[in-house]
Amino acid sequence: MYYDPTYLLLIPGLLLALWAQGAVKSAYAKYSRVPSRNGLPAAEAVRRMLEASGNYRVQVLPGQGTLTDHYDPRNQTLKLSEGVYNSSSVAALGIAAHEAGHAMQDKEGYALLGLRSAIVPAVNIGSKLSFPIFIVGLIMSFRPLTLIGIALFALTVLFTLITLPVEFDASRRAIAMLNASGLIAKDEEKGVRKVLNAAAMTYVAAAVGAILQLLRLILISRSRSRD
Image (cartoon, rainbow, N blue to C red; front, side, top):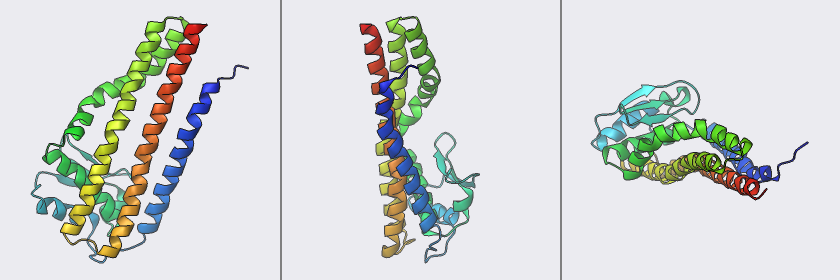
């Protein structure tokens, strides 16, 4: 049986991803049970934050699933998941405000958000073709193909790295908007920060995992070229 030692490179990223997912679930479960003092549903709160910031273009809509909240700059819609849309919990307000942060990035022309959106089509193609092309290159012992596969996967790495400042900035904006609109008390800010920080770690884990996978592909390619 063939043993590939490069798989060991992926273990730290996998462990970090599992820890991050657990942290998000734990923070969300805890603070989704803590009602905010203002009592506003997250959907209404996010509308008020956006309007107070001069952003009247965004549609706030209910979505499906759990923690599937997202802002789509293509049609300027902000969708809040089932457990967030009508909830007035501290967790719901934090999540909704984070997506409002993305909406404000879009309105103000935040460069990294635009760059991330622009490379999505290329990243989608690269994520689908990178491994098949890389494997074919290995089988055929044709190094140019393996390098193409590596280059295509590098697009995924680039996407995860660009995502980090985009997400951190959205969370910074979320806290600022919540405080400016008076939607959270000072002691509630701690809970919002814990939820947002835990969510941010999932993006850090994704970036670390992608970098380690890219390094693994490079090592495999170099090892085969020496054989």
